[in-house]
Amino acid sequence: MEIIVQPDSQAASRIASRIISRLIREKTRPVLGLATGNTPLQVYKELVRMHREEGLSFAGVTTFNLDEYVGLSPDHPSSFHAFMARNLFHHIDVPRESIHIPDGQAKDIPGFCRRYEEDIRSSGGIDLQVLGIGTDGHIGFNEPSSSLASRTRIKTLTAQTRRDNASSFDGEEHVPYHCITMGVGTILDSRMCLLLAFGKKKARAVAAACEGPVTAMVPASALQMHPRAVVIVDGEASSGLERADYYQWVYAHKPDWQKY
Ligand code: PGA
Image (cartoon, rainbow, N blue to C red; front, side):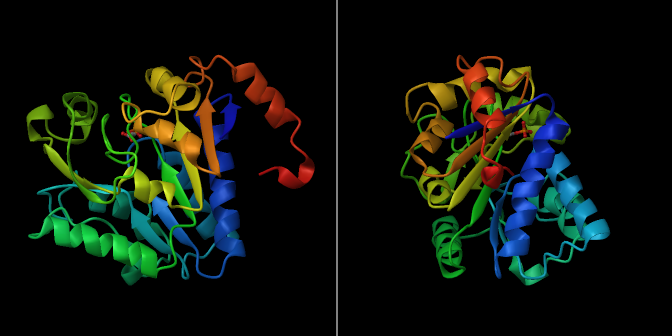
């Protein structure tokens, strides 16, 4: 696991955007795994800026989003479909048919989830998966106790996650109870994982994920088993890390050829 501590979320998001844009420029048909939530917003803004000002084209990119609420239509303003359209897809040149987001209205949810996994496989697999982390240590919507081998499936959100996400809805009572999410196993199959976390309220989850034991009770800790997981945090989110000084030392002494 490479842990990069940055002074603030802007600096952290700039590094993440550089990693993503380099992949898009260097690979012929890159496959991106994308996340929703507040955390990746600055990254999406920066990618849109690079598209407008620096000619970064998404024409050859395929995307797979991590998750979606069950029961929400794609045009529901709180759906992750709408979030992605608003914050990224409407502003770049990714072809409509290259975008994949779990269908919250699927009639046959297990069948849909199997096809989602097949689609990821037949696209060649995810090159880079962008991740946030829940205050409870979830990645995607893999809540504590999720199997670390899990695949795309329906999950029930914890009370904590429903509270955390209530601000995107007209009150907590409107937050759905269920979601479709890529599994931890699906995420671990990505060739690179890039987890971002900002703010004091993520400090505990970040410390548990990076320095605690690998456990289903902190699904993000499964990234310790991934050969190429990069965690980029701001100062506040790093405040629970015992070895933060060491991670900063390592980053400061990275060989030039290895810098992002
Ligand atoms: P956030 O959500 O980016 O809105 O903090 C992260 C998550 O729940 O994975």
